[in-house]
Amino acid sequence: MANRSGESAFVPVATITALIVVIWYLACLPMNADLPQLKDAQGLGNRYAIAWALERPVLPAPHQVLVELYNSTIGTRLFRQTADGMVLNPRNLLFHAWVTLSATLVGFLIGAMLGIGLAIAIIHSRVLQKSLMPWIIASQTIPILAIAPIIIVALGSVGLTGLIPKSVISAYLSFFPITIGMVKGLSSADSMQIDLMRTYNASRPVTFTKLRWPAALPFLFASLKVSISISLVGAIVGELPTGAQAGLGARLLSGSYYGQTVQIWSALFMAAILAALLLALVSLVERLTLRAMGGRP
Image 1 (tube, rainbow, N blue to C red):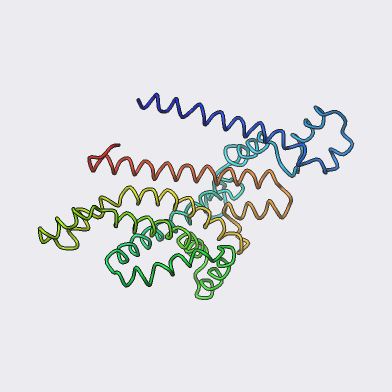
Image 2 (image 1 turned 90 degrees about the vertical axis):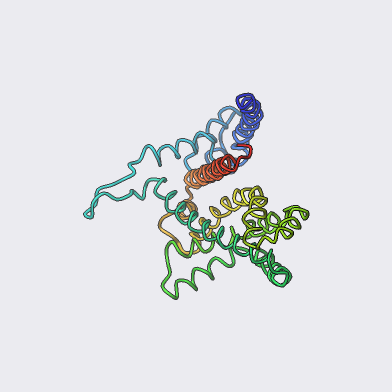
């Protein structure tokens, strides 16, 4: 069954991927049509050949992005020798991916703990549910691009720079879906089962651990999958206002400064790869947890 499911999922995914690649290749000509290299070119085939090989295109071809991704990772040494010994090479895209990933994971952990804590508090207090929940929702109406510089400046004024401000921005984005999902999940326990626990004179901690928490796990993992992707976005956004020298956000900035669109797209591809790996990691933890609890793996 697992193999059949994998095969059935592969065909539509491969079809959509191929369609996107074809449209992308076709879009290279109209997107780059105003560049000087194409203005005097004759013949549709020749124009497309030029559009797919431009050094600084508006829209690079897929193979250009893949070549840049290869050259900046496998084709570049990950470590270099310095006076202090072997250090990570800032020319390698994996170095920048690690910088962003570290901020993502720290922010995700902070956001997860904050979100779960808020949900537990809200579910056990009607006052908090009525007073705190509107503020949690309102916090997400503030554009992150507006609040990120404020967070960085505020934390920098007390000496907190580097990883911490980016992690705080990631946590700010990631705690919300976890809070909402866990409030829904902790409230999803059947009312008859809750009444039965009360009949047995079960304490709140026992009711929580034996009934509410297991019922909330599917909601928790669904929220974590959304949250970890948002955390990555928050880490990248946190690198933009500071003019950071490392991280995927820094690669995006340097690529935009020097008109290196291929570099920008390769950084975007690396961010997408990181997001897919993080999502796969959460899915793996979910399967292992459900299997340990006797549920469907």
